[in-house]
Image (cartoon, rainbow, N blue to C red):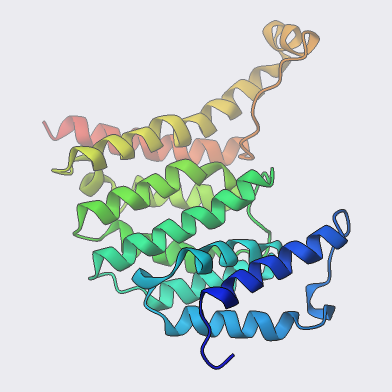
Length: 249
């Protein structure tokens, strides 16, 4: 396997599929399966050595299949960030495309949140760099990633991310010359950040007569995970930045 190509990546994906077919409803200890460690090591070496822009589809598909072992998510995300040069927009876009496919995998698996072991600190540092990019395509694609996978993030990370969006980068995004950036940013504020606050407010009213009627007909509110204090912090931050914006005109 000194020279690994498309056949090797197809082998990795089929190997994972075969193991899952043999044990469909069992929590698998992947490290104990013969040949697994060698295949994963070889695969990660290929990801490391190849140009992200030239990743074949078979490699991308295999990297997603490998996420059956959730411990590999952090390894693959760190590897992608390490290989990505913020000054090369096409490389950044390919990285964001892979991240989207990773998060989509967990959404398709009916996961409410990303794995508990996910390294949010490293991911947050990467997002801040991407949001401060001078390339409109990069910023737009980053905001799209946040918008589409916001509900997969942990409660504490959504709080930190909300503070970042309504803090350091708020005016850069809200007043951007690029219409796509402005539109996507406002969608995040209205349909993601504001939704978290609304869920908490509606939950607080669950003891009212309307809330009792809601429970009687078995209507449930979507859970955002935020508590009242966290929602108040985000609400205050949003109110502050909007007041600053209004007073500037």
